[in-house]
Image 1 (cartoon, one colour):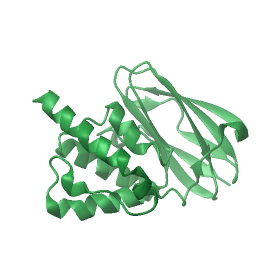
Image 2: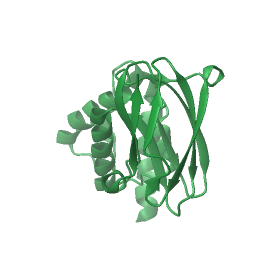
Image 3: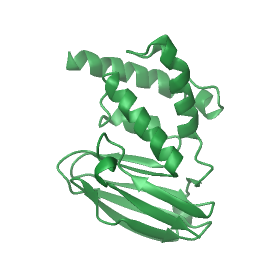
Length: 189
């Protein structure tokens, strides 16, 4: 059964990746064809996709050659090694995230609304039988560039440019992680 669910998930992701340019252009992709997706959920999921593709409220994927600072963040079970960071508007930062825990984790940069949408999307993925720790989940986030998924023992990098002043957060949106405190605050001034 698990193999069948994973195969269905891989097919859904492959369809989503093929539709990637359409998503970037604001056209979305056909959620109705995804396994476990009822027709009435199609519009809701398309709206969540649109919200998760829009990072304009807090920045955009950065150019590694323009990074002015590197910040290492440890992810462990179930916490981040830091709970607060400060940056300047316009600053491009290389985040090196190390998962020293025994389970997968996620590192997502966003404002409060973005993080809430990411957690809703994660719950819906679970309800549809998808594995949020699978590599295909990371591929779904690649276009926006503000999320890493890490298996236990993995280290990955994310480069981000903060374009607006405000208070934002980084979070692990795997089910239950953020809710027990696996998140931190980012102040951009």
